[in-house]
Image 1 (cartoon, rainbow, N blue to C red):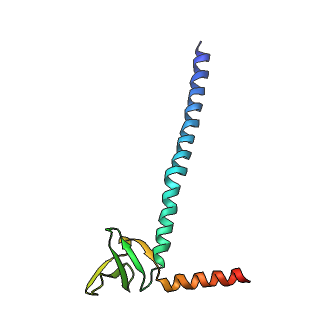
Image 2 (spheres, one colour; image 1 turned 180 degrees about the vertical axis):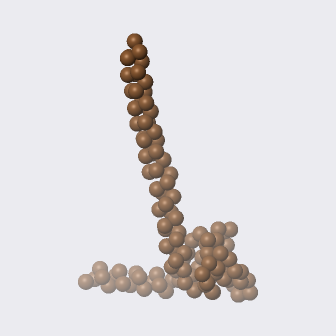
Length: 115
């Protein structure tokens, strides 16, 4: 009888290991991997910041970048040009390039389509 008990406990361990592997794979593909992709996207966005870009801060304010340094940006808020606030790059949640660069990109695409 002890031989049957040992065989069934070995099968139970094997089944538990299979479920742990499945759980880890689930967590990786639905939690860890998307977070890594989002981090890479945000780092690329922050690396491409330029003076004159319109940004959305994490607090919900829209502004224009007027100066850049390693980890600090100076953002100008409002139309009166008097509100200039230094902030960390990490406080920027979205970047919108000026309309001129967007118009140039669409012109290039149209020229390629015509060829």
